[in-house]
Length: 364
Image (cartoon, rainbow, N blue to C red):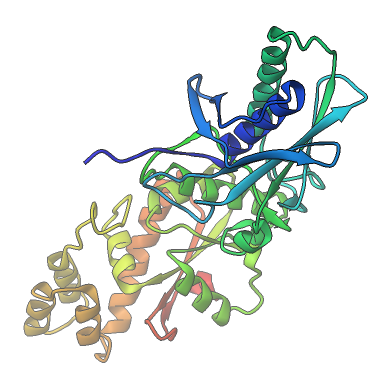
């Protein structure tokens, strides 16, 4: 099956801006426009509407995430374009576009969260529209102002990482390629990097990495002094996250995990998703034997269907504390190897109710 590519919020904004510019300068609303992509290709985008709005034109595009939809899939991205006294293009953020309030992002504090590549894409699309209008006999020398808006942007942003990145009031206008590649890991990895950049810029001494929302919630409940800005949900990107932590020179890191992910990390899997990292419970059974579990228990572990089944068997037994310590030691060694330097790696291991099964001295 061929998966359908979509387009970014940056491409949606560029298309809306080009449509509004053409309507303003030629007097004709556009059904679709052809826009440049940052990677050098082009894409034709359907225009939802284009209408007079005050002294300018408002055009809108429905963002399409393709077969990899995210929070912004089907969001309505708008561009309001009007003439200005100066030359060239002046870009602003309007309602539904976030404002940056913390350092560490590619946009300065106080500016709208429209990343550099989409800014260039929007400006280029509008410059093309001005050239098209001039070719049609509209030779007027004109400066233009464009304001990017997002319907329900503030509501959508609550479902993104923007609040913890210090981006308030709306979503970000993003996209380095212009298109959305189905089921790509690139967007998630970019989010991890952004979160770590903000931590570094804000002086966070110890990033707290978790595999999801629930493990993060349990970690912050156990450590109430930990701010949201010190946490990032890295999903299954074990190796990638540790490499990026190392690149930024952090001296310590704290992981909040459940048992199954801990076992995979202890086994040294770079990426811990089930489709690419099979949980080998025979290895776990061998480790159980090292920790003093009875042979019949080790045999049951080797034949278990899931890590949860193995944990339910092992947790009530006194040897479990020794096993948890062995697993966190092995996982920490793998983390340091992926990181590339000898930093402190702490672990907090939770059960699914939020109880701490084990924590290393570094986590205290």
